[in-house]
Image 1 (cartoon, rainbow over the protein chains, first blue to last red):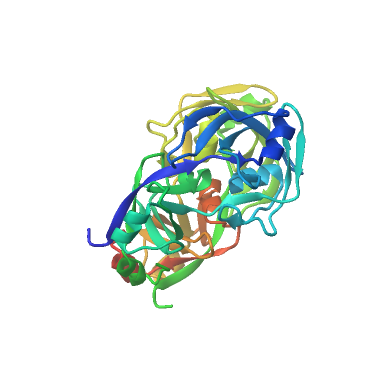
Image 2 (cartoon, rainbow over the protein chains, first blue to last red):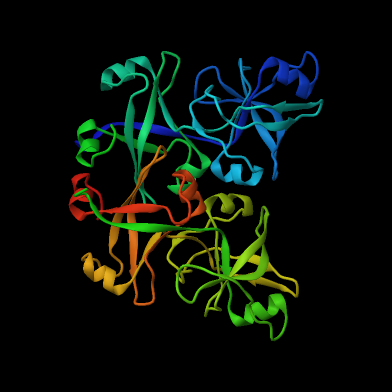
Length: 204
Length: 204
């Protein structure tokens, strides 16, 4: 297939929360530490046993998983489906970019955090190791086109490539994107060559 | 834009139910008739004031809208997101094609219906009037490629065209598909020319 640059395994991101140490302690109590439930694909990252409740102006999402390790910012990543239930209108953003994003209320067993901002819908992206990026002629922040096969197949344009020596190859989509084209974890998708993408006038 | 065959307005289908007269009477009582809440885009079809509860092995969807008029089959159209909540695994299907689809329980104010089958995820499709199909060189059951613009843009391959003199031009997607690319009702999407679709090796 001369249109295919490389194949990438899929990771479907359900709604989840990243916490600062300060917010962890407010929600779960002084001196509290996250407990690892399981590793996720990206090295060093893990799903924690802890969950929180997200409260918005119109509704609630219960048992939302906390992802570790702790970060320098608290961030709530939900789908657009979730956003209608909560009654918030989050932008599509890369991690850590919270400018103009809405807030929400987080509730844990020991307390409540009122966020002024930090609710986003994650921008779909490919995690890629530096060596792989070099091999395929890609660099950090490139945009590529990704093809998904099958009866509900589609092509994602404007897919952000994030390159880092700590990353493992993985195409991150949220549950709306996965359900639109029937993707599951570890399914393979195809990154098109720049020439194939340009043939349709797509960003590549 | 030489790649564009025509533009089509979007209709986002939320979860809904079509009922037979027999099931309407079981759920709402003998002699019951649907009450129109509002017309929908397709001529003669309407959203009814009546709602039902859908019960599956793992969960419940409440206040699911009934669409009228009554049909010769009862059909439950949900998203893949909904299917995980209910705990069923419906196929992607055109209306009326229930072979091998799962069932569920419907609950109304007057009674309960246990469906053996009829739960589907709707196959995305374009409703098109016969005159428009002729103008654009398309016929019933053709498959076309549809482009959605914007920051979460994508291209839907294998989009079914349904041609009928009673249809009004409309691209029907479900809420997962709409939320994956930020579509709202009445947004415009673009059907690619066969040549543009073939340039990427897509079904057209």
